[in-house]
Length: 328
Image 1 (cartoon, rainbow, N blue to C red):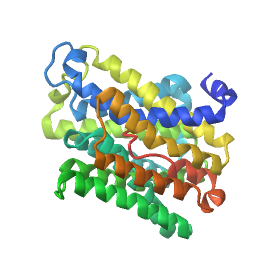
Image 2 (spheres, rainbow, N blue to C red):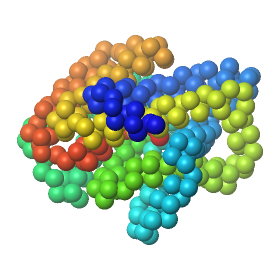
Image 3 (tube, rainbow, N blue to C red):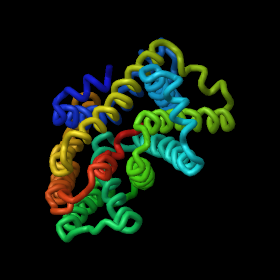
């Protein structure tokens, strides 16, 4: 059983592996796009954002059902009250929007930029959390956030000759969705809802949203190439390993580790993301990206070393540590 295997694994290894898999997602999506014709058996445009997000999220939802069983999932869903249903529905819709913004953004910006700009998501979440969740932001956290914002401005402005790149704007827009889904996820986790329900509903609702919206705008035939060639197989592997397994490894690690350890090891996420962009996509960071990376990582380190990490509940760290580069 998955739960038994994960519960006996080294929690630090689970945590680092989950962050590595999460950081792999934007690079892997860009790689799939670049090799779309080969995977589809010769089709010209099989990997549109509609196909990837619909098939990927559907496979992720089906993977949860196949592992835990259809009946337990239905029983869990029936036990939810109306308020929780609304929260899960909003979370699923926002997840669909988040994925769409990241996918479209990757058309006009680099994966390296997307990884670094994604660090703005936790900053927004922390600011919203200070208001909604009444969590105090300490002085050194403000310093860390300032470093992150300076690094982001360097990417957005200097790397584009002080012109706003549409792809970078879409990635920044995705960080707003990330903050919103993080807040909803925090509230869901705080009420001790079954994790399999949260993972299943998020992916199933997202795939349903893509199916309905795209069918209305472009017609059902828009998905005709979604199952061509080896695309379905590729997306199934992507969904099971990169989406579902990474999420379960992440949450199982949270049960075993204290928040200070979690904060320390999640610092590796941007490093993984930039490394994967180089290996899979051949992206060599420019001098602006190197400087911005150094500034942003300094901000992340300062933030994670602040005293508030010690007092932050594990459930909140589960949300705060998630990167918006996880385009689920």
